[in-house]
Length: 165
Ligand SMILES: CC(C)(COP(=O)(O)OP(=O)(O)OC[C@H]1O[C@@H](n2cnc3c(N)ncnc32)[C@H](O)[C@@H]1OP(=O)(O)O)[C@@H](O)C(=O)NCCC(=O)NCCS
Picture 1 (cartoon, rainbow, N blue to C red):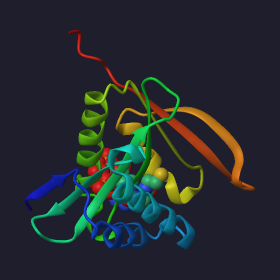
Picture 2 (picture 1 turned 180 degrees about the vertical axis):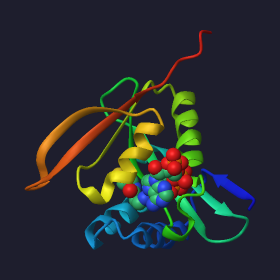
Picture 3 (picture 1 turned 120 degrees about the horizontal axis):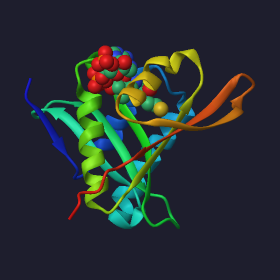
Picture 4 (picture 1 turned 60 degrees about the vertical axis):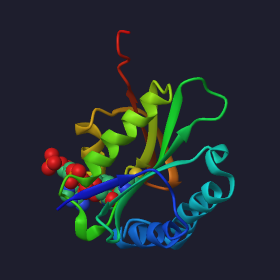
C-alpha cells in the first residue's frame, strides 16, 4: 500500500474528517462537528487559524487518517495535538504512528518543544493510551471526573529533543 501524506487542506476534507472520526465509533455527533469546525476554520483563515493538518491517503483514494495540531496560543514552544484519528478499517497498520511521527517533525520544524494531548480515562481508550505511551508520551496530569463522573481527562506530554545545532 503506497501511502501519501499531505499537509495542504482541501474543501473535500470536511467530509473526509467527518467520515474518519465517525468510523472510529469513539466520538459522538457533537465531537465530530467540532472536528469539522476546525477544518472550516483552517479553510477560512489559513495558517492564521492556528490549526495545521496532516492527512494520509492511499493514492487518490479516501483519507485514511489525519492529525490536527497547533501552537497553544500565548505559549512560546508548546503545541497541542487536537485530533488524531485513523479510519476504523485502516487501524493497526502503522498509519497512526506514521501520522504522529510526521506531525512531531512538523512541530519541531515550527519551533515546538513540547506536545500536549488529552484523552479519556475510559476503558474504551485503553489502546489509545497504550499508543501514546509507546510513542513516547508521558502522563502529566489527570483531571478527575472531568468529562463525566468516572471519566477523567488524562493529559500527556512529549518533549521533543532539539538537535544540538
Ligand atoms: C489511536 C489511533 C490513532 C492509532 O492509530 P493506528 O493506525 O490504529 O495505530 P498504529 O497501527 O500506528 O499503531 C498501533 C498501536 O497503537 C495501539 N492501538 C490503538 N488503537 C488501536 C486499534 N484500534 N487497533 C490496533 N492498535 C491500536 C496499539 O497499542 C498498537 O501498538 P503496537 O503496534 O505496539 O501493537 C487509532 O487507532 C484511532 O483512530 N483510534 C480511535 C480514535 C482515537 O482514539 N483517537 C485519539 C483520541 S484521544
